[in-house]
Image (cartoon, rainbow, N blue to C red; front, side, top):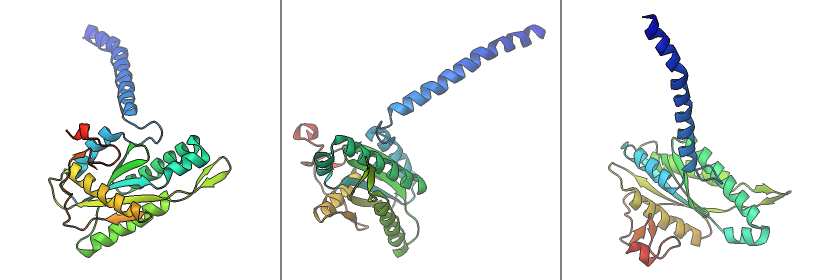
Length: 221
């Protein structure tokens, strides 16, 4: 018995070492799936978690978000200022999503996406979601301080709702993207897709409409 106890005790440091190594490896893998500028999930990691969220069968809303006049920010204030705006936008979006049992990611450049819960029934669903979106717009459009000055931020958000499972994330992203593009042309804010609207039957890449930035004919083929 004493020999067994000695062997077990001798093995404890080894097990502890492996446990620490496993935790470090897990953290490194997770860090590699995070956008280094904003801390949000990268596209693939976001889509993986978004699909899991949609698979629960509860009502969800899929958002695609784009910053308005972002090129002008870079041209006027410099790329460091643009990075500050991207970082602030990501942090604000991430905090908002976490507060609404959701998940957020950076798709690339100044484009983001999120999935959030939708509460209520009937007209109350739209009212609750509208209130959430207004709160998000107010949060994202707060000026970003940079080197002693405030940089104005303006956003466009397209929203598509999932009403039942199974849900097609790509189709919901495409529909949200269409509404984002529509409201962007009108100057910004958010556009909520009607309940029964379907995504347009266009070739897409990663939920983006063919011909939009981020897609090419080669990719679609």
